[in-house]
Length: 105
Image 1 (cartoon, rainbow, N blue to C red):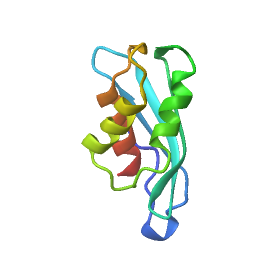
Image 2 (image 1 turned 60 degrees about the vertical axis):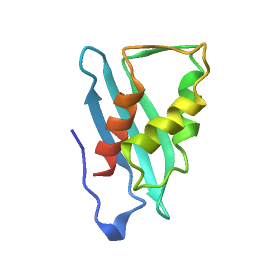
Image 3 (image 1 turned 30 degrees about the horizontal axis):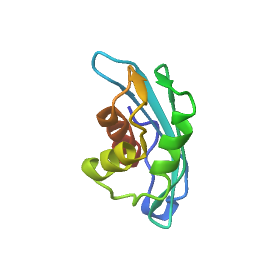
């Protein structure tokens, strides 16, 4: 579900989306689009990450992506940022990409 729609003249307005990952947990994103790129990306939800600071790593990986990035580009940015030791419980890279795309619709 997308909480609000933005008009082209209002690109810096905050955007919010939620997505329930099938068989997983709720993932939420809040972000802004500024000059065509993602800014202030903040993921949250009822999922778990090990180590916990991985959430900051994911947010940073999404920061600055083009607002017109496709699913594959979003997934690649997240996968590249994740450490091989990272454990995600109730969260998937595909789920992260889906909630980002929903926020940008």
